[in-house]
Length: 87
Image (cartoon, rainbow, N blue to C red; front, side):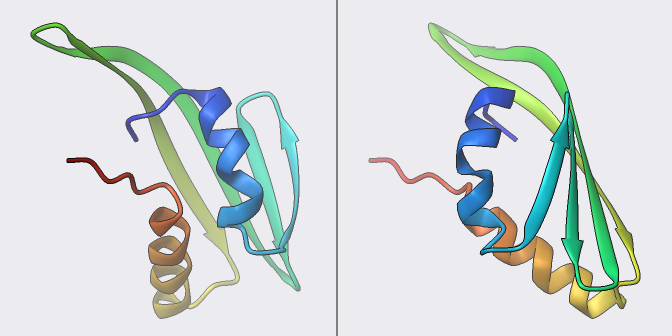
């Protein structure tokens, strides 16, 4: 994702849509009933394009107890809250 860890955590409550979660350093554990999602954040080197510098963070999801279609729906909803527009 093209954001830093602080920005990720700032947007997290909205992206999780009321689901309970806990954080520990660069990890997030989401509790959704009997299911769990573990999100791991790994800062990456900035992306530089001419004079533009963009922060980057590798975001990995691990789903426990989710059917594949449910995991896809969650991920799509989650990522929509991190989309940015420009123009």
